[in-house]
Amino acid sequence: MAQRAEKCNGRKRVLIVDDHPVTSLGIAAMIEKEPDLVVCGKAQDANSALAAVEKLSPDLAVVDVFLHSCGGLNLIKDIKTRRPELAVLVFSIHDESFYAERALRAGARGYISKRESPDQFIKAVREVLNGGIYVGEKTTSEILRRFVTGRKDSGKSSLNGLTDREFQVFQFIGEGLQTRQIAERLHVSVKTIETHREHIKKKLDLDSAGKLAKYAIQWAQMEKGA
Image (cartoon, rainbow, N blue to C red; front, side, top):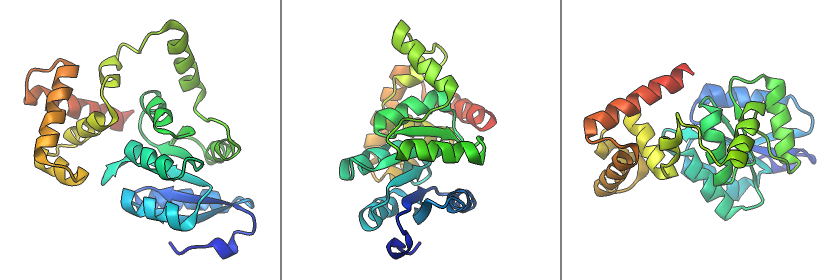
């Protein structure tokens, strides 16, 4: 998308990072209806997103947590390294109760589900642009509960033990990708992915690659049906 600095007229500039073109258009349509917001650019992968951040100087980046070409969480970390002041809002179909806290730790200021209404999405955009933190009420309550009790959710505690990169590899395994395919996606060596797989198996207490694949696929199916 072409640069639109000359047409902003004081409106807050929003960069959309999503690898689904139809979804990206929908996000843009919601934003463009607002008189004080403008879409300054769109990106479908990490490289184009980082280039757009440098070239377009957005006020907000709306990022999907899981991009097929890279991990949204790693992209958020890269964005914050280059532009610490840039607000990031994660807008994703994936389970907020699991991903929101990871997104906040990575540097995002908010997380909102794609199942929410357009009005709620715009509310989240404004909250983050105004320097606040936005997550759903249920997620807020869960984070506070864990903070007070010191407990993790028992159903997800094992996965919570994975690093962001390990969890990204776990997601790709759930999509049915083989080790070499994952290595190509992440631009790392096959040996690096094999090491990640071993760490994941150990953390999840799985003693074979087959059990890991089965668990990852079941997780992916559950996420799609959530």
